[in-house]
Amino acid sequence: MCVGNVATLALQKLSTVLLESKLTEEMVEMVVQVLEACFKKPSPLLLRAHVLLYVDAKAAQMWQNKRFRELLVRNREFSTELFGLLVGGDTTRS
Image (cartoon, rainbow, N blue to C red; front, top):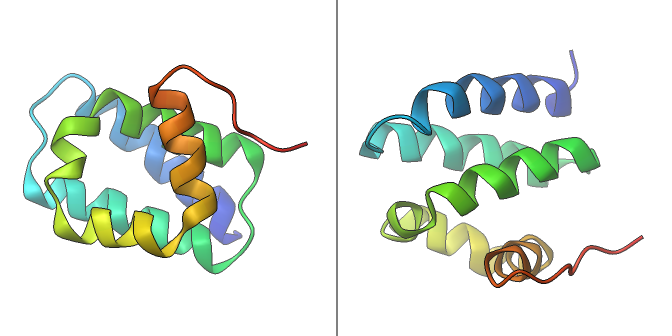
């Protein structure tokens, strides 16, 4: 199974649990690991959408995590998409 498929499945599983519960440090760490895997290889658009929607729902809690902030700093394209989503704009490229 490719990295994109594994990451997509992991995010789907995480989101069903995490969106309904308080975000723990361990949960944030799992999301950061999934995101890091996404950036090592090009990720499919569906995966990016899952990531953006998940992070959007938990943005305040995610932002408190130092590794998450560092990940955004290292990956400008993702952070541009994320912040575009958070302010309601569409910054995705075709």
